[in-house]
Amino acid sequence: MVHIASKREATALRWNYLRLRNGQTCGTMVLSAADWGRLHRTLDAAKFWSLDASGNRSGLDGADWLIEGRRKDIYHAVHRWSPCGEIHDLGRLFFAMAGSPLADVELY
Image (tube, rainbow, N blue to C red; front, side):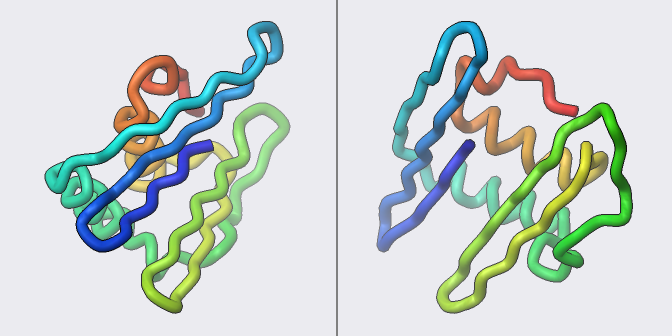
């Protein structure tokens, strides 16, 4: 789980990572203005705010992704099974911004 929030001039990223053998690890960090801009560009590239809430793919082997966003009073959630393209890039960005160990997790 990766949670990014911006309030006034500050942007923070909080993450939790649950591994079956090693238990849960978590972390918090402050994001730079450049990181915040990169996130917005990636959201725009994925057309996140205009995507349908659910995709039409499913399967037995893969991962269910839920990406939620709020801007002012607008809430939007996108649920996808093992996405590719810009939605995958968006999820990869969340994990990359969180740093290790999430940056090293294989996403599918």
